[in-house]
Image 1 (cartoon, chains in turn brown, purple):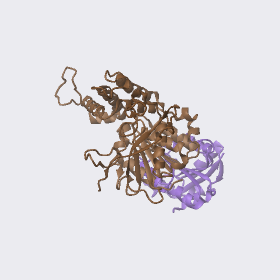
Image 2: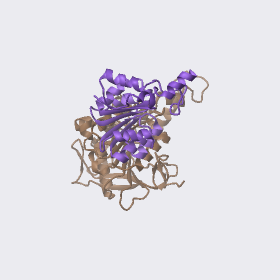
Image 3: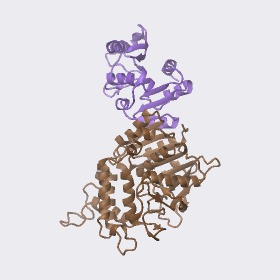
Image 4: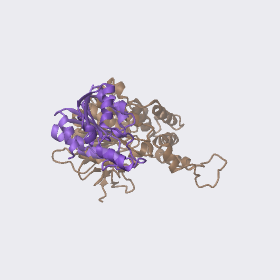
Length: 374
Length: 184
């Protein structure tokens, strides 16, 4: 199998006075998006597949970074030559979201007005705003309509907004392990994560970029909480059980005893040093605000304009964005007589299954991408 | 294509909306689509079948029939088909009533246990009948119900279903399959 070597590209638009008007009414510009592409755009520009990443993702969805051979794409086993999303066949695009911290404009970017990082002066933005920014990129690439938009979790929310906001530009839409609005339980987890960051003494009301200490601990705790919600009872039992970490017996102190603790600490610390705390706060806020029923009046009126063929995929053990929530999306589409397929991936891996359990998800995705558009 | 599909095909008007409950790999729906240009939708529980339906371009809902039916609005379909699945259903009355709520017409087919060869098997061997179509033992069969054409007709009378098409008086003994088109 060929190894894809990729390097990020950049696109900048929304220069003043043509700033992007956000759902909140605030404006922001210019906006830069970091993106990567794989495969070749065909002559009719009809084979483009847009992948929308989740909370902690970035534009590097597949392959190996040219400058850093250890940096492998976050969905590499799913996207690439001969894989479920076959880059021999499709021109795959993935961009870091607005508000992100992986090369796109976000709270850590320099505000042209003050020549300082935005911090908390960055405007609150929504999933719909992210999609509007992405659409400018797609337009700039000269693509009139996308063969498919696909994404899991927060990426699935973007995929839904794509189908609603740009109905004629999306032929196929695959929202995976997502929801049309967060449950109170999911809202609560996001709120606790934000609180962990904001109460870190190094957070300094979001202006920490020029400080010697960064709010890495708060961010690590937020990530640890997040990780619990991405797993399931079964997967945690299977992965860790009550096994002790490099110990034969309890330490009878407050050091790390259990493997599950050590795993969360490891994941938290890794994330704390590679992600921007403000981005985390802004992106989880965008996720929390995501509510298609509130925005459009009802799910039916949100989906009324959809022209894409839809395939909604849920994961049986996902308790963060449950199959029931996916079914609510499907039911509303069915009521409107839209072309919709509902598929449940049987997996014990919880919400994260969309990133790791590829056999089933890959098969339906491949088949759906090959099927005729409606 | 099997003979039953042609019987179903002949009962379906062109360019109508058809819902197939337990649609398997989508063979029947694609057959109907090919010959009658229907607008199709399937309900199916097995993942591999879902993947096949997606490949054939058939929109499909993964779930069990009873649960899925509640998702549809009244008279959303011209025909709701339940083909060779009735014998596996826990609440046949609920399902048939729901089919007639969701569809203008319901098409039901099932293996007929009144067929003379099946009666003869039971009579002569004393064992629960096994056929090419239903090759199971009593302890491992997914078919939890034993239905004859006469039984089904009696149910229709009791429930007040109108039989638009169905077997004649000889059907119970001489048809391997029951085939009914119902409405309310």
